Length: 163
Length: 374
Image (tube, rainbow over all chains, first blue to last red; front, side, top):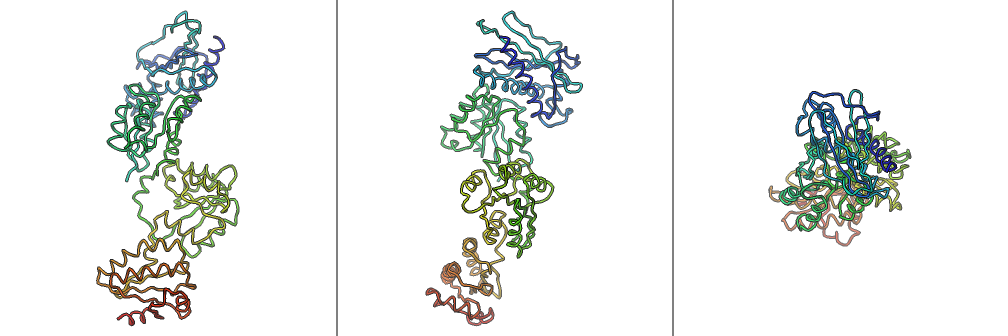
């Protein structure tokens, strides 16, 4: 279990770095996890699950302010032109899909076939994900200058039946 | 006509990224948010290429592709699959579906443009409005080869044209030059190290302002594998080394759609004059023949009654010249035009060596020909 979590932790770090560099031309570096800086506009979480020989879910957390920056960079438009509603939600969903797609592909290649779920996005204030005793949890922090992002990996224990 | 690109993706972000990537090009990007809508749009609009997401709700890319392939009207439409899943099994499955290509997310817009540019002919927006040049207009040619003899051959071969030849030794210099200057044609040596000509081709295709520059490969006649690869990649054509100037001029004229009519035809005193150029060759005969019937009809329509074939520039009367003139005279006679051939005594003698030319009316000058046809 620990070995699988270590593998997914490493893949998530690579995936976030790769997706940010390719789609946003933005460098992010991992850092010890810390709570997101409160954003008056709220927070957003994108998530995609993977089900199979490895089963779990990866959440990406960001403040709405950073999410607008992300959407603007992805679409190549100034932040001021980004609709904070649908455009931001869709961009975070796609970003999560790419990050978890990267992880999933490499899990499959290492002999852990799994399939992806459709991305989902949640918005609100002071969001957090409730864990369970059946799940192993890992949180990774990422930073780009003043911007802060968290990735949370929940991995199902392979001896249990349901997530 | 604009290229139609259909993007079928449940992510609005991806659809917007696709639309933005192709904005500099003369193309129309159609969007569909799921497979069902995508099939309806494809059926209605008949796109030139479809960019299809693999993982989608409602109907996934796999099923969409199956339905496209079952539709007689759409089965030949090229599809590039976009997927966030790059696992070996997924890639094999995608390849087996018969897609033209696949692209793993995340991807850069330039890579998407380059992949699509391999399948359809993307033209920059501003290139569409450009007027076709004439053969005697200045044209900018960039030669990319690490052997100095090659640009020297190209320069020498084109010295009788106003075309400007610039040369660089490396592919990265060529890309920089094309980005900073207006280049009409690139000639790239296929034997450049590390497949540099092929990389250059792909890099040129991925930038809006260089995507429509025709690229010719250059290699020796026996390098058949390189020639095949160049054609497969999308090179405009392959020029054999050593460079044959006539072949080079013809290929450049064709690819740039240079106006060449004026080189061959003139109207003088109510007569149509067909001028056979000094460097006449069989490739030129094909080009000239495409104009001939229209020119004869126009002459007859305008009340003209004479065709004069001017061989003054020619040094040797070759079989292709005779093969050009014979049908020209036959077509002219059908339109009741009278014909004469103008040339020196030596040319007349050479012509008469051919059995088919015995009935031709020869004259030493244009004025003598006009007098003879009165």
